[in-house]
Length: 159
Image 1 (cartoon, rainbow, N blue to C red):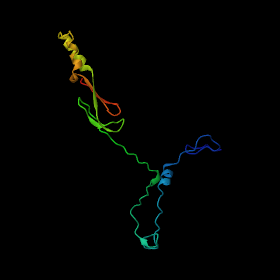
Image 2 (cartoon, rainbow, N blue to C red; image 1 turned 135 degrees about the horizontal axis):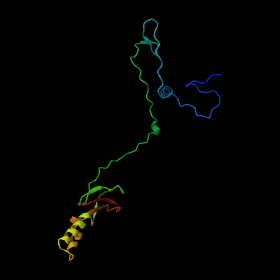
Image 3 (cartoon, rainbow, N blue to C red; image 1 turned 180 degrees about the vertical axis):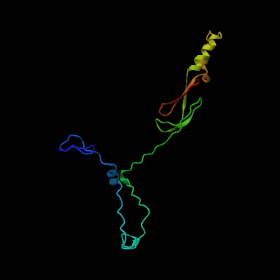
Image 4 (cartoon, rainbow, N blue to C red; image 1 turned 90 degrees about the horizontal axis):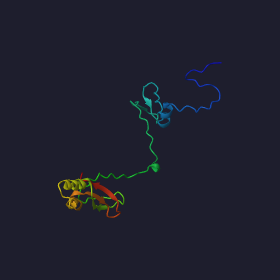
């Protein structure tokens, strides 16, 4: 009875899965090696497929497998540059409805609006004048909407 070495498999049934193919087996199944050239009678030339003598090539190239033309799926990818939103309408392609649009603007109270209101209160404008920043569009944040599908596209924050 012999003891199996580190590279020998134990004899008998086994529930372990078989080993994967080696690198050479894998490469040779995809890239078959070309047949070795046969030297001619005494001339040192290699005999070609037509029986004539030719000089042996200095190297062999292995054929690259060509994918099946029916299995190629072409996917067109459109890369849209990031749009910078400011306090003016922007012309762009809407990512929701894929149409060229000019954005509609909506003004909302943001950090600059509240900071201006608080500053006016501290300066003594407590009789209602401190709420003026809520009426000035230049102090409010701007939301950009698509006029076609009404999707929110981006926001410009003043602060």
